[in-house]
Image (cartoon, rainbow, N blue to C red; front, side):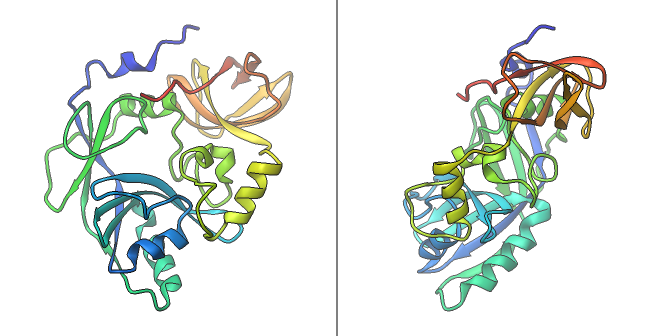
Length: 269
């Protein structure tokens, strides 16, 4: 099996605009920044207008409520971008915690788009290549997400809600503690368990990219007859899955009787 660089997959797709199944929640008001700083896993108060940063909304036990991309639209205005199925959950969770904070929380009915290559919008590194994400109230012509886009995501090792991420997954297992968490900011729900695992332990499994001819979500990942993981997403030739930490990078594995190997996600641009 040959490992073909993922950047080759995007050569013919640069400039393509895709529809994104996103949910949006606006948080506005004079105390919006302070409120979100207390609620989310990453620093947001330091964002400048037009900047974005990934973050997590967590339970007190550090289980994921929703992965987010936080955009600062103005001095007192933030937009939280998440999976479409989670917008109401994000909104209701924040409203319950708002108490006397001087801010408003409101779901927004935007349409989301991803453009591969340069363009207008915020940078999106979920696909391991240059891309921008945007949103509007109007409908624009765009392609539905396809296998090529899914291949880019898998090869970049990016987890998504409902496949690699849900309420049972710890942030460190999915690797989002490296991208969505600040270990120097103030308190937020779930901070203590995340910090304890980061400084004193390590997860038993990690999300890994695999090279395999064919696989399907739910397939067991096997080494020497023992199940060491499970596939979460797959396209022909590539897969993502959770694999036990003790499995060596050069281990020969099996998925559905076919040979499989581990690979580190390609470096992001």
